[in-house]
Image (tube, rainbow over all chains, first blue to last red; front, top):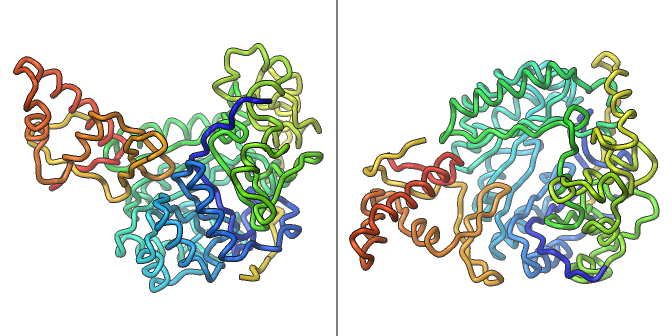
Length: 363
Length: 94
């Protein structure tokens, strides 16, 4: 492949996989303990500068839970000095008001705070820990400190019927944006799929509720409803295409096209400790593997939608079919679409979730 | 979303303008978004200070153009601002 690499716009910096929450839908790899050799402060600062030089303007500081890194203030300050739009993606734990104020003073542009449901019992069953009330306190501090904020809620069977209550909570907390993101079945969410999968009727109803709220709150609160896999006709444009707009760097320094690419066997991903980010982005075999259209099988190769959804999600293709180059089975045109239809029909009660264990950050 | 000419637009707190040397253009940054601005849009946003009204912004941009151009400019400014208010990256000063 000789076409020049596209410009990346967003760096997703997964500072750690450690997290006090144990969410049943977590997108971290199930084998997250293998990536514990976290990058040091200086490594991250260099990666931010290298990303900015490549054209990146958006930075997501995420994890795991980025707040467990004691150097987060230094990282925010460096990112902001580079002009990056610096977004903290957080559970709000562990956080007190003073630390939030110092993050703001370091130049934080925006906070994305997760909640698991509008109802405490449902929220904490999915999160695996007591957390609901603390999150409400964090939201109040965010407003007091005048930080812009998005409230994020991952949707699944146990909370999809609560969309109205979640919107009401976002309004009460004064969120600038509300992201209603349906679960994507990778990582821990794939392990819990039978307990998380909703019905098609639940999805339709939730979508209508979100649309009504969007119309009502036009110009005051932005509402995003992220479409679920498994219930659409076509797959989502995963990461806006492989190694096209996003660079993800894992806690231990692997430069990846998405959060889960290192779970695909046989792909060589390189570490930012060993090579400049620009070289990795432009030429590493892992980045090149599914960039553009040359890799596509039929029916993608001749499909009119190939420049819209880019063949869907490679990780989903691998984890469902064993072949990362297969058409995403979420697509109705995919030869393996039957696997998705079958999974939709194979549900279990939404209890007894498989929850991730605790993990500590060395930083 | 319909805006009055007397409204006084300004950047929302979550939005930030930054110059992109690579494209030689201004970019409006907001959560998970970057809007690359053409010269006209950049001029409009540069005047959205929460003090000027939309009518005053149109006046400023129409100065130096033929009088017949004002209506077209006003339409363009309104379209842009209505879209950005709907996306909540521009807000109206109280």
